[in-house]
Amino acid sequence: MSDLLNEKLGVGPESEIEEKLALKLATEWHSLFCPKLLRWVKDKPKNCFRWEHVSRDVEGDEAKSLYSSQKARTYFIMPEEFGHKRTTIYQTDELPEYGDYLLDFYVFPKNMAWSMAFTHESGPKMMNLGPFFLKHPDYKSLQRKNEESLQAKGASYPVNA
Image (cartoon, rainbow, N blue to C red; front, side):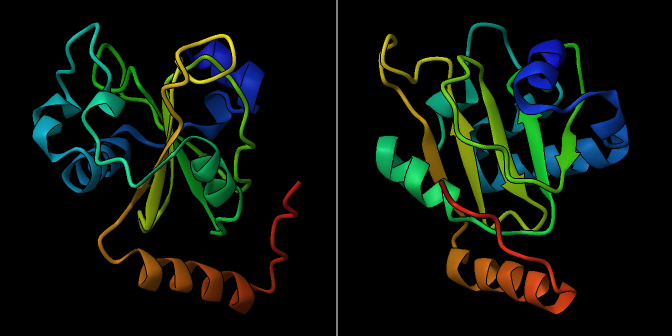
């Protein structure tokens, strides 16, 4: 998976965060977006996907549109394999562009205002399951803080294609 993420999203070993922080982020992510599977942070079974168990606030094209409008200073990418033989989460300053990657992974900002679940089942030749946009219960307030943080830093907003 890491080779595919590197190839498709441009993240690699230099983008990996420290394991202790990765476990902390994964635990927080599960408690917010996938609480039924919190025990999977370190022991995720094979042949089961987190996105099958998340609350799906927005799906498909609407999810893609909402995702592309998100702004934050830092984004994390958690591969589906997290907890199954690996504890790697990647960090990037750029919102990964939406694409039909045929990979399972999750993108979220540091404050977890939202998360985007990319699935291997999305895309025209697949079952069109996903992507799914997930919102924190305090989404609006947290996303406003993300935008204010960017303005305070003087960062420009990503251009939406």
